[in-house]
Amino acid sequence: MDTIQIKDKTFAVSIHEADIQREVARVASEINRDLEGKNPLFLSVLNGSFMFTADLMKHITIPCEISFVKLASYQGVSSTGVIKEVIGINEDLAGRTIVIVEDIVDTGLTMQRLLDTLGTRHPKEIHIASLLVKPDKLTVPLNIEYVAMRIPNDFIVGYGLDYDGLGRNYRNIYTVVD
Ligand code: 5GP
Image 1 (cartoon, helix red, strand yellow):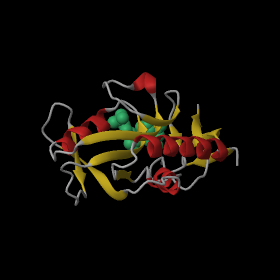
Image 2 (cartoon, helix red, strand yellow):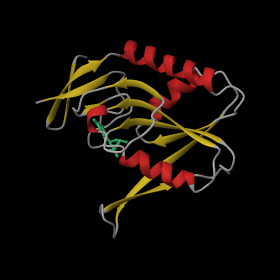
Image 3 (cartoon, protein in one colour):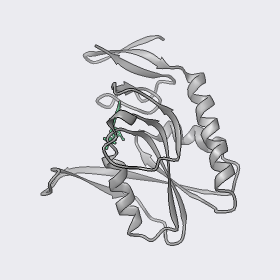
C-alpha cells in the first residue's frame, strides 16, 4: 500500500517497514551497549509509541524493566494554555536509570514536560529514545541520545502514530500529501 486515505487527507508512504525495523534494531543495540549493568526502566509513552516500544524491546538483551505512562492534556491556567499531566507512574524512580520511549519529538515541549515531571522523582539518570525527531521544529534544547530516524516537518501517520485516532495500525510510515 503506497498511499492511504484517512478522512480528508491522503498520505504516501515515506519510510518503509524494513527501514524502520533496521533503525529500531540499531537503536536497541546502542542501548544494549550503553546501559548494560544499569537495569534500566523503560517508560513507554502511550499511545503513539506502542508499536515502536514492542519492536524495540524485542531487541533489548540486557536485564531491564518496562512500564507505560500516558500524558493527559487539559486546558489549564498557564502561559501555554494546555497542560500535560503525566499519569501512570507507579514505580519508585529514585536512583533508577530511566529510558523514555517516545514516538516523535516535534517542538520538544512534551518531552521537556516529561523530563521535568520525572526529574522530581529523583532518578539517577534519564535517557531519551525517540522513533522520530523533526530537528527543524525543535524549540527546546534536548539531548535525544537514541533516535531511529530524523524527518522533515511534514505530518506523518502509521507505525503507532495517528491522524484523528486513525492510522496507528500501519506497518509503514506515511507522509501527508498536500
Ligand atoms: P511536541 O510537544 O514535541 O511538539 O509534540 C510531540 C507530540 O506531538 C507527539 O508525541 C505526537 O503526539 C504529536 N506529533 C508531532 N508531530 C506529529 C506528526 O507528524 N504526526 C503525528 N501523528 N503526531 C505528531
